[in-house]
Amino acid sequence: MSNHDNWIPEWTDLKIAISLLSRIPVSNENEQLQARSPNQAWAFPIVGILVGFFSCCLAWIGLLMELNNFAVGFLIVTGAALVTGAMHYDGLADTLDGLWGGWTPSQRLEIMKDSHIGVYGVIGLVISVGLQATLYGQIIQQSIWPIIGIMTISRAVMVPVMGFLKNPQTSGLSSQVGQPKIQTIFMAMALGIIVSLLTESWAAIGGAILAAFMIAKVAKSKIGGQTGDILGATQQLAEVSALVCVAAVL
Image (cartoon, rainbow, N blue to C red; front, side, top):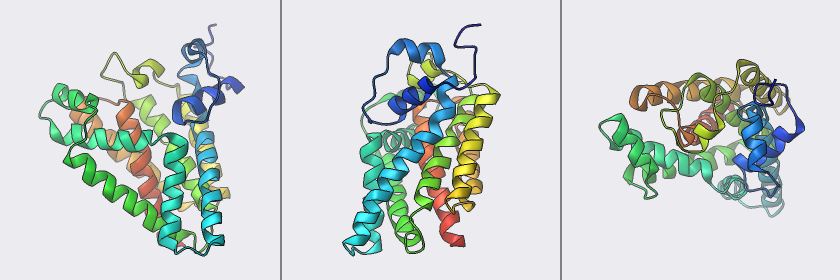
């Protein structure tokens, strides 16, 4: 049995996931990615824990400085953008420009590859980042721990989107990674749910799953599957949806 067929988690998977979803400096050989992908996707939620922890540290500093909640909310968003290199924000912008800027699947995919940003992407980013900062600012009045749960579950739901939707392209990072097995999907979701429950953000679970389902449905209809940009948009919209749900119950 090849390493690609073996879905059982390995420590190497964590290093691969960190290199894929963040700018945290880790050594990662392309051979490891080829050997383990897409089995390493179970570790996506752990990357969310790391991103959330860094954002929590910035939030704690902001609270110590007695900044207003809105400013602290922006610090949290800034922390996530710094650790990830804003890759998910870029995916959201490209997805919005592509899905609503083209008339055919091929046109939409071509627009999503374009490095330029259009009006759909700009408006979407402003709304998304604004909502995130505002809602994080509201949540931290009660607790900073939901930050970690929200950022974890929003990355966990990327895995079932990868698993249940094929990539309509033959190039790109998502195509290179491939489709995870059901066992990998289950483990990623289990990690995301457990962390959400432990961090007082149980309401985030339903919100993130609903957002992932909706973006997957739209992506399948408009381009026939998922791409790296779709996965980035999934993370961002799942984070916003999870935030709305958590803020509503706290």
